[in-house]
Image 1 (cartoon, rainbow, N blue to C red):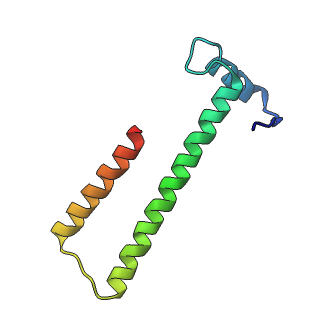
Image 2 (tube, helix red, strand yellow):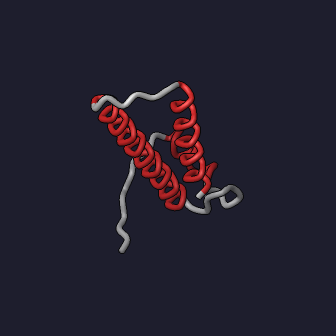
Length: 90
């Protein structure tokens, strides 16, 4: 199911959208461009929520007496960043 959305833009923004969607760039239409921007924002929000959840888990572990050595923090951080990188490549 699809629906329409009317958006008013200042002239400068409309000119930029026109440049990005002239058929020679990555986006053929303004709708395609806006959908891509929304998808990107949704992915970033999901990533932000994931990071927040991981921070909450870590805070709970610390509250329960779990501590980490510098080596463990480095290894966990590297693994976490590697996992985020894999998600970005999808």
